[in-house]
Structure formats: C-alpha cells, structure tokens
Image (cartoon, rainbow, N blue to C red; front, side):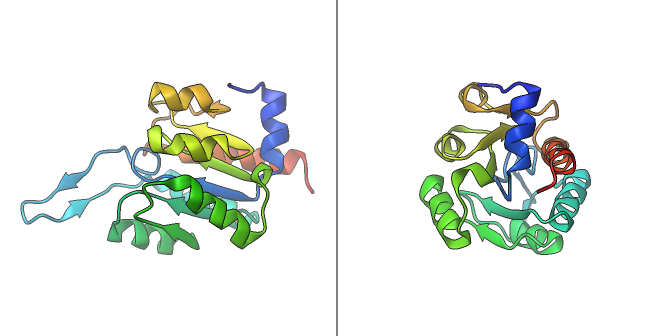
Length: 171
C-alpha cells in the first residue's frame, strides 16, 4: 500500500489535521515504572519541534490513545496540541467525532499509528503513516513508513514530509 513519491506528495499537500497514537509513535513504546509505581515516558524533542513547526504552518494536531497518562497531557500542553483523547481503546469512533467537530473530510487527515488498534483509523483517512518498527499488519495498510522508529524521530520525519509538500503545493 506504500505510495509513490508523487502520490505521497499529492496526499500530503491536502493534510490539515495530524492524528497520532502515543505509545510506539511519540514514544518508543516502552512503559517504565519507578519503584513507587510512577509511570515514565520519554518523548523525542525532534518530534516536538516538528509538531511546533507544523502548528506554525497551520496544521492542527490530535492525539488518540488507549491509555491515560498525565505525561501525555503535559506533553500535549507543552506543544500546543489541542485535541487529546485518552482512554480511547476503539479509536475509529473518536477519529470520526474529531472529523465532525472540526468539519474535516478524511482526505484532510493523516493518522500515524504503530499497532493493531490503529488500523481502522488508518484505513479511514487520506494518508496513513507508521514508524519503521510498526507491526506488520500496520505496515500493510500504511501509505508511508518512516525510516525512523517510534519515539526516535518517526513523527518528525513524517511532519517534514507534510511541511515540504505544503511548501511545494501552497493552497
């Protein structure tokens, strides 16, 4: 399902909302607990800068994740991500609700996911992307697979592609 460079540029140029999973996309997918039970997550600063650049370029961002984490809320707030939906084990209805709320069509959305719960929303958007270490089933439905792994610059790589497409095809 991987698109040619030309097809990818065409789809990327129409994107207005970037929707991302967290664990395995914005993080490396590992969950670490301290001895007192606190959960730790590590986010890549390059991904963060890419999100900031995307917001400045007019993109909107959303997070849909099955888990609940104060670290996700904090990171989203730091970066200016306005749409955060946690405890969303079934992600497609949440995605559809976001499209309605923001008056966007599927072709205006990119979804970045890495595991099985991400497949339905990936199949419902104009551009489906994944990190290099996504599960095989996700890679099979992705239009673009980043060279970078989740939590290691995959989001930045995808955002650079989107921003380049916007520069090449200003609307």
